[in-house]
Image (cartoon, rainbow, N blue to C red; front, top):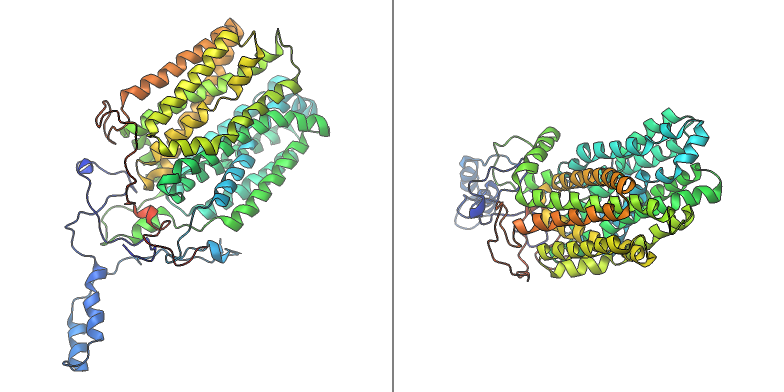
Length: 541
């Protein structure tokens, strides 16, 4: 390994656990220790021969060099440096990739990741409190505008499937700038829509490109050091949750105060444009994982190159062959069912007896959830110190407690509702599960995140429909009682695999039930080496 912070590696130990494993396209496969030296190392004697002086004549030395076998040409040991985005827009020098001057994941960068997540994910939820305004503005029925949230969410699901996996194939900086430019322009188009059909079409495509948070989350996982990964992810995820809460709570308030639903989207466009400028200024031009892996190859590989279609097909394989991912997806799906079901039925609960709250007061309850988001940095630091399995267990206990409280007193005492709104269990679960899934393989993080988020999205859709149906048919106790049952599924999925189960262990508690973390392990992944130098960096951007 280079001591100047370069991503170049010269070898590493093999993992016995993976000997019979057929790798996913793009998955890191480390060479064995007894592998032959690379072609780059064979070329060193040639360089030495040219500089030899003393006992050998220059002509003899030149003949020896020319007659020596030539090593095969291999890709450059360093990913190419870029100075412009899209060949036109200059990249700030401090954000350009230089192997001898590695990037450092700072708190400022982390907070900007969270802010960009907040401003973009809100696009999916601005429409929910504005449906009546849309019906009046476009002179259509409430039934016709009721399809807008579904269309927007369908676009989001499409983006999760087709765009977010690109994070394993291309550089994240230009990818993020492109999707943010498109979401900003489409938000402006939505605000200018002259009729319902145009609004619906633009809303679909706005949902497709509103995947900035799902590109930023695995990017943060790549850039953050292992001992700070959970903290970094908690800030980005809290920004995502904050965007959901703000859009739902403030969308209607802004429209009422300003007199037009269009002002909500104009504000959203301005916030995204501001986030775009921040990301252009601070996003590091980190090489793609394909570039990093090619740069560290010691010989030419017969393996077919990683393409967009192989990435999509490998996602299907990951979804059925990775026990840790499947466990995390089940837990994430069920937790999102509880989360979405709670917030959907909260409107029905507070608008009915004995509360009879107005829409404005109900919206204020959404702001209580912001207090829970503020705890994200503390939650992340705690998870960094815990075995991730135990973090999920604690979050499930907190979620169970809040739902039991709702079953007992939701329709009797408003204090129970306030406590449930403040619940931090969902955040702890998301951070713990995401961090655990990212440990599977750094080269697959974008695809792993896409599979996990698709399952969470399905949980949101199913949870909203099921909770609404139960609430309207059987009342609030039955609805929140069902949520208690859903949390029970989380415990079942969690206890099937112990905290130290191996990557390919489907069932069991191998490794025991120890709840303390092992000492930090050295970084062995080629796609992570460039972000953290082996020794003190020579320069800090």
